[in-house]
Image (cartoon, rainbow, N blue to C red; front, side, top):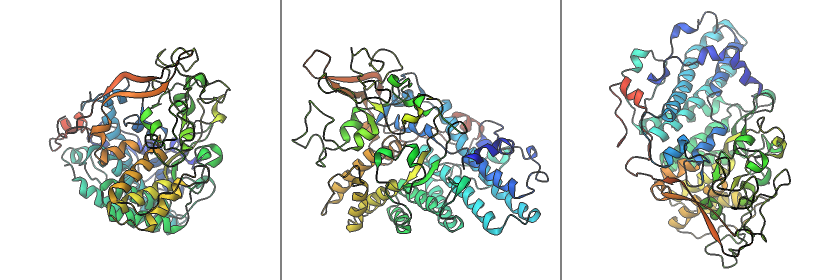
Amino acid sequence: MRTTYFLILICGISLMAGCKRGLLDTYPKDKLSSATFWANREDAVNAVNAIYRFLPGTGELNWDMLSDIATTNSNAATTSNIEKGTTHANMDFFQDLWNTGYKAIRASNYFLENIDQVQERDASLTDELRDRLKGEARFLRAYFYVRLVMLFGDVPLVTRTLNIEEAAVLERTPAAQVWDFVDEELTAIADMLPPSYTGNDIGRVTEGAAMALQARAMLYAGRWQRAADAAKAVIDLNRYHIYPEFSKLFTYGAENNTEVIFDRQYAKDIASTEFFYSFGPRGMNGDVGLCPTRTLADAFETINGLSIHDDPAFNPENPYANRDPRLRYTLFIPAFSDAVPGDVLFNNRAYDPRPGSGTADEVEVDYRRTKTGYGMKKYINVEDLNDPRNSGTNFILIRYADVLLAYVEAKTELNQLDNTVFTALNEVRQRQDVNLPPVLAPKTQPQMREIVRHERMVELALEGLRFFDIRRWKTAEDLMQGPIPGMTYIRQGQTEVDTLVYTGVVRFFDEERDYLFPIPQQEVLLNDNFDQNPNF
């Protein structure tokens, strides 16, 4: 799949390029002649490959910066404005999200309307391959409908290509109908997709990916039984397994392991990103685009399986000792005091962001430093140290731990707390290099709700999912308020504990408005049938 992204440059760009901004990115049909393009098997493969380019990747971290577990290092960034509640329907951020979603949907619809004519011209496009490619396109279309309905609520459900006149009179489809469509599509296509791929096809949509996306979609929709059934179907495949080493799960060496269900494929020098430069600590010449919060750091339990507030063995003067190992696999840990140093960076520099430390990571010096004292470690790999703008680690979009936790949450909401729930939960908590104490029955529904929500927070941190969780749980109104908490520390030569608070962004979340983004104002102006979301 790494090499197929470049086939887009050959013919996919001309097929999928946007034309008029807004109006669901309808395309002029005279841009591509079906007589010259849909001629052979290669055209069909290239066309579906072009849809993959719309998939999110490392930019998914923006969602965590709109949650309680992270922020950006710039109080002028778009994400900061959203955190502060200073949003409006004319922001390019919302229009871009809308456009990307509907460009992908339009491309999928166009592909599905035209692929059959290829088979009439080229017998090498077998029924099996044709159906597989259709399944991929329908999966990608469903993927973007999940994203759109979560962000905007009721959105137009479009399953065919439209001209500008048709798009201008569309109405918003109730979210429940969009969820129905997604559920039906993902059920229908699972059998059209293979269990796995080899060679350059690795990274394409599989049967398991369709089932896992269905579990996530139904979880987001609050359809607990459908979510539980879909997640259990993935579990019963016995095809995916928890990777034993969380510490290596997001490294080059673990790419395409059996925990990965669907990812965005990258490759150094070919399809690379600037991930290390964008998100690495300043002490390794990174630009610190994301700053984890103390809310996240404090959430990791002690090795006894207790919160730091409940475990009498927790030592506030050595706060990162004897903690859930995922804490140090997820974050670069700052120095707490002269006696309790922080992590050692890949270039052997000490990670000491304390005020007055004089290091490249010292807080409150300039905008390119962490604002909270913590640094992102997940996906930051030593192989990228000397070429930080040329990162090639795949970005995981769906993994097996997510499916297991979806199963636990859905069964919890159904109050069906049988042994399968605890088995799934403990499979995540007890991977080889984490090995936390198991959660044991009996538990009440409220207790299990708190446990699984906590587990999603720490297991899936900095993977772009927290934003969607706290919004569907309706907890953002409590979590996204006020200044942002940073590290606790003792200054050099001092003895008293101080606490860093980042006041450059003071969060504000309006429960009557902010659980949905506004419909982009241009869409409302172009289509009289579009009403705006409440209070925008």
